[in-house]
Image (cartoon, rainbow, N blue to C red):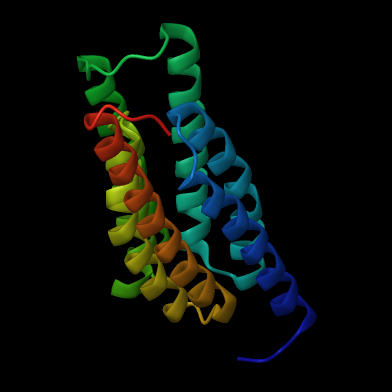
Length: 187
């Protein structure tokens, strides 16, 4: 790995992406998670272009499509905690797009880590419950750590570790709030 201006810029965009993603683990609504995540994806896409990480870039496009679909659906149909046939169809289509993208960007088994992480993340936000998002975030961050090792993104590795910690904190905070709510106290 050579320390070039392109590499340094890629790491700056990784940091921007990470700061935004850290915020998502602390947000309370699915809509706000999706919007902030979309902005983070823009920064992530630039980082992947600069790193020539094509499977990661393909998954950024899948994730952007996913977030747009979920945001529009929630805006059009309102917040709904019930999973419908339409929701299942959307998940299947997004998974199909992920798999097709993986075929075209395959560079070895480790390049698939971005696909696995994206598919799992898609499932976590598809669930419509922020608790599922935060719990699955732990597994997702571990997979992204592996992918960042594969593409030699040093800041990516560091940031994913920080995001992993942020996901754990988000889960702890949510459990604490639920426990306090169950005891009849307010925050």
